[in-house]
Length: 263
Image (cartoon, rainbow, N blue to C red; front, side, top):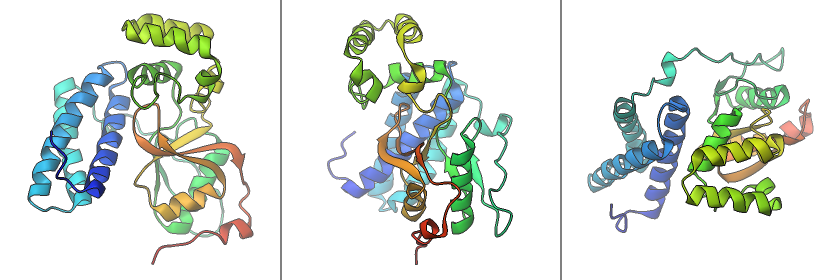
């Protein structure tokens, strides 16, 4: 698909929406479908539909939201993916404060560290809008699958994972298995050699990812209380990472005074 004529800002909106959709579909599919096949199928459709929308001069964000629903429907049919809405809902965290409006945390909140959820809930209450977790706690099989799937893309053959970068011998061994497309051996080696809690904060529920298009004011507020980084996650989506390696809880008034609502 030729994207040379597309506005760079529109392309960024398209890619963020597409990445978030692929991560969501892959999580819904679990091990029932090949994540690489889901990603290739979804990205091709998304880019095709988006190019048409831009020829019609549709606003990029409006087009991306509409196309995400269309592609999700077709991908679920293609790969027999059960929609997330049909699954048992995850329990919502209790409001952190007894006074004021209650905040809401949606998405993958199960298994997440309570202090992280408390921060997200208070920020949600302050802004009067839900905070949605795109990626939360991952099982070891889910993390291994995400590493294998995205090994050669944004993970740069494992070099963008801090723990693997410090364990070069293991990274090289994993890389050789990836080049051989030996997925079972790749996962087996991870299970044998990896320090899972160091490999990813998601394993123990100590990190959450929010979508890249989350309200910047919400992101800035959360960042006053949790460690924050931007980039891609192991599932391939552009996200804001928040972990509890630095946490402010309870939230002080001086911290809350830094939070700014939009006009």
